[in-house]
Amino acid sequence: MISLRSLFFHSPRICRLVRILLGAIFILAGGLKLVDPRAFARTISAYGLLPEELLVPAAIALPAVELLAGTGLLFKVRGSLTTVCGLLTCFLFVLGYAIWKNLDVDCGCFSQLEIHARNTLVLAFLRDLCLMAASFYLMAGSRVNPKSLSR
Image (cartoon, rainbow, N blue to C red):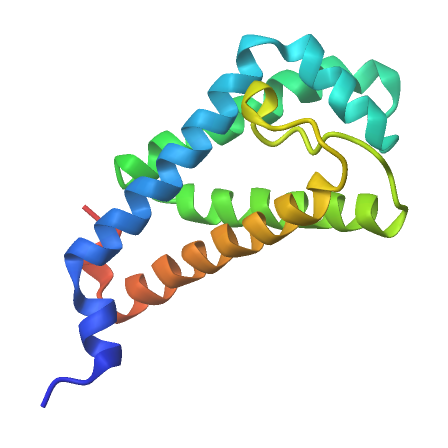
């Protein structure tokens, strides 16, 4: 009898779908921020975590890494899932800091697509937790079925 666990992790369709969705989300988020890096630099500035001279370089580098990591997930490039997990960890820490400090800032996750309403930080934090769960699923799936993420 096939267990639910083995069916869930051995299903190439589920792994492929999760990988494609996660990659597309990172491509979309990175691409939207790269369109207007100065606007994203202003969003980063609102958090008060970086000195002013690093805002524009960070506003270009961070979305570029997101875009590359998302593209890497789509094409099964080694290290892209680890990069996505690292980015999500950083995002969760920054969002957690903003929630803890009760900052009234735009999360900056999807730039123009986000609703600029109050208290979106908690929703962004929960969304990033779900994305982290998806990346953990892919990591677990790659251990159970190494061909799921490798070429």
